[in-house]
Image 1 (tube, rainbow, N blue to C red):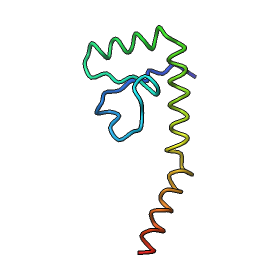
Image 2: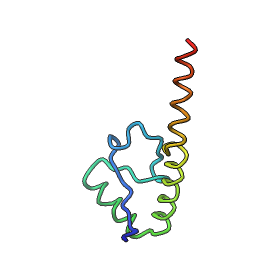
Image 3: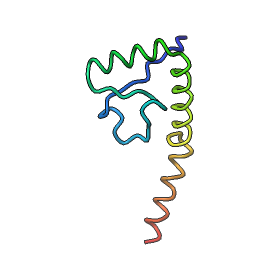
Amino acid sequence: MCKKLLMMTTSIGCEGLQVVDGRHLLIADTAEAFAAACAIIIQDRELAQAMAQNALQLVREQHDSATVLSKLDSIIARLVDR
């Protein structure tokens, strides 16, 4: 299985997500910036690995099913109490 990931997007691609450029992924909005981000990820394996770990942690904390269902339960409980 391939373990290499290119963790990049545009500003529009990450709208609504609580990601930080350079911590969870790289954000690039032009062809030149996207090419530079590709080069950074390919050349800096430590940064790529750190971003992958940070992104995985973010997904686990904010988007796994238990977390999402807990938030949904809270919303429903507030609505029922009204």
